Amino acid sequence: MLVWVAALAAISTSCGTAEKVQASGPGGEAAEVTVGVVKVSRRSLRQQLTLSSELAPFQEIDVYAKEAGYVKELNVDYGSRVKAGQVLATLEIPELQLQLQQDDAAIKRAQDQITRASHELRRVEAQHRALHLQFTRLDGVAKSKPGMVAQQEIDDAQGKDLAAEAQNEASKSNLEAAESQLAEAQAKRLRDQILFDYSKITAPFAGVITQRYANLGTLMQAGTSSSTQAMPLVHLSEDKLFRLVIPVPESYVRFIHVGDGVNVTVPSLNRAFPGKIARFSVDVREDTRTMRTEVDVPNQSGALMPGLYAEATLTLDQRNGVLAVPLEAINREGSRTSVYLVGPSHRLEVRPVTLGVQTPSQAEALAGLEEGDEVVVSDRSGLKPGQEVKAQAVDIEAARPRGS
Image 1 (cartoon, one colour):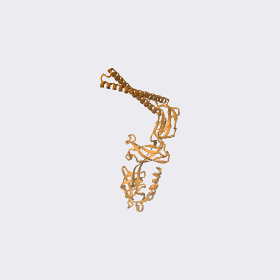
Image 2: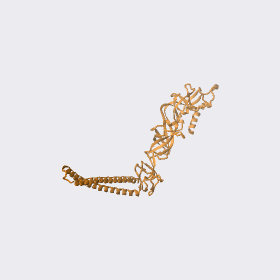
Image 3: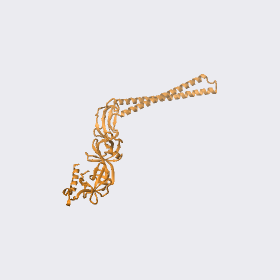
Image 4: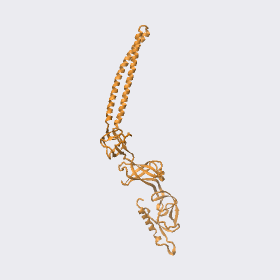
């Protein structure tokens, strides 16, 4: 800022020398004053907004055990890069191992019971078929030749047939019960196997281990239990994609669109990274009058780290081939803006202008100026409309400090 003030002072001094040396010409007439001017030209203007924040992982999580157990194997440490599904640690859970053995025994018993019930059912079905056939024959003979078969014999055959049928139904029920017991035993085995599989703690997504809380032999409590203060195994952060949360002032909210490119600069790395507006809150906070906006920043090179200070430069508006006037030429009086223009007769004219897009050094002239107009950029104190001046072209870009 001090360099910029000094540069402006240099322009003002060099262009105002004639006025200071000769206050008046021969006969008391006012001497011609030299002023620094710049011609209005067409440029491409880009209105930008730079906001600062800290880089944060796109997602991060404390990884907990789902079942209580002792850490038997620990496969990661600080800085370890892991893939999604990779085993981070293995727990020793003796109770579940014993339970699985009991489940296997219960399944074996149920299978044996099914085998016995199946054999019994086949035997009973064969017996029922034979007794039913015997009764059917006796009953047929009795109906075709009355009196040839004693009624008692027919009744006994029918009784045996009915008893065999009842036994057959009972055997079917026994087999169904055995099959149901097997299904229950298998379901319990599957449930216990799922719980036992939780002894292997895996990474929910790819990333880097930024914290390790446990060691070999540490007793891990189940993270799903609300009755205990469970300790996480590790802290996992995604490192291939970062998010930058920036507070956009409400006056710029209308320029924010999902998908717009953002230039993210990390001063400590002296590098810039491409980013995109990924999401925003669609509301303005009452206390800060800002809208939460998130910029996604890919990190394929691995150079970025959580917590790094970063500056996000958003392009709010861009105009190509517009009339541009240096900000040094603009006079502001409240909401009104104007410039000192040097006319063809070398006399000063105050010209009201309407401004559009503004950058740190230029402003779009929507109305009031034409290409080639000469506007005064040097010190305008003491100048008056209609005053005759000598226009001296200045290199305003060279006078500015680098980066302005």
